[in-house]
Amino acid sequence: MISIIIPTLNEESVIGSTVDSLNSRMTLPHEIIVTDGRSTDQTCEIARGKGATVVEFAGGHRQTIAEGRNDGAAAAHGDFLAFMDADCHLMNPDKFFTTALDYFSSHPKTVAMTVSIRVLPEMETRADMIVFVIFNTYLRILNNIFGVGMAAGEFQMIRTSAFKQVGGYNPALVASEDVDIFYRLAKVGKIEFMPHLTIFHTGRRAHKIGWPKLIMSWIMNSISMFLRGKAYSKEWKVIR
Image (cartoon, rainbow, N blue to C red; front, top):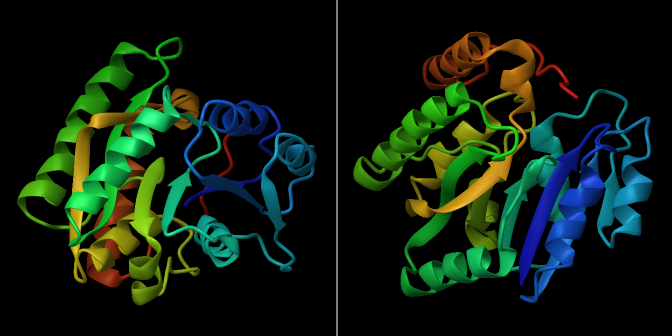
């Protein structure tokens, strides 16, 4: 079974369509777990109404996305953990996950994979297209050629056994937790970038703050992770 884990914080505008698009079109055995960081809107109610299991954060601090993903993994029952952002969509979930599962089955040394990323066609700008062509090529080179684990948070699929082996996400990281876990996973098995599988998202962060600022934050966080073992950002601001 595949456990699809979606961290949320005030995602009432997108979580219903995200969960529904998976549950309504997916026949493979799966569960959808929404881990919520104390939303003040209707996120939890909408997610439950669409058939997701909701795990609500009870801590006194602002939950990191790493904590949210770990909480989802702790509640999961699947042999594979698929982490997605709340504003992400798969055009054909059954075909997507069948291809992914077939690859894992035929490549037992592969412990995790990531895929191509694009902005939804109706929201995509020319800048989005250029950035993600470059970024997807970057992921392919690092993972498939150099064997250095690298992935963005839009989609990460990990064998549950490997996730437990590396201890999950680092809960202290407010950013670059996705980079960190794939770097550690690459030390216990093979990481694969699947260029012919694509996940779509809204592109809302880049559209809100601009690509130059977002790319600079990616670069600074990645450099800080490799040199200091912690993110450069003190807080990952909520963009809704």
